[in-house]
Image 1 (tube, rainbow, N blue to C red):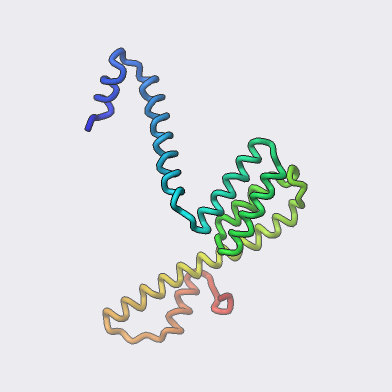
Image 2 (image 1 turned 135 degrees about the vertical axis):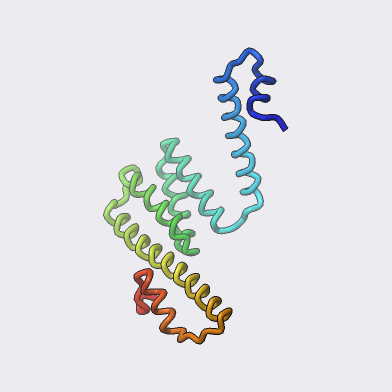
Amino acid sequence: ELTSEQLFTALYPEGNRNAYHTLRKRLYGKLQEFISLKLMEGDLTPSSSVNAMLNIGQFFIDKQRPKLALKSLQKAKRKALRYQFYAKHLEVLKILMINAYSFNLDYEVLFDEWKTVKQVSDLDEKITLSSSLIRSKLSEAKQSGEVIILQEMAESELAKLGIHPSEI
């Protein structure tokens, strides 16, 4: 295995560092692209499908094809909603809001939907974290032999994250 300096000397004995770094950057980019394509090749999950639709939508936006972009982004939005991929749903909404004029969409309606999804996403994240905290506390209690009142402990952990049990 060669060091960067050895590679530089072997490839560019005349000492052209700019050419060396340009080549390295281009090769690294191609390697990233290759690995990404290989990983996506066998990935038929809903998440990869949403990512693909987002990418296609962005491609059509870049190519000034708003109708095709909108169609792809709407599919991505529906799938993200169906599978509760809140981060992807928010990403789609952000792209739709940025391009609302080109898509002839009502920005305010999109923004209201974004706020709602953001609130649900934040709550989902807090619930996931509190669930992890609760499991950790249960594990600690089990190891120490401590007797705990589950409801009190759960409410305490939820309160740490600002969640009232009625929100769940």
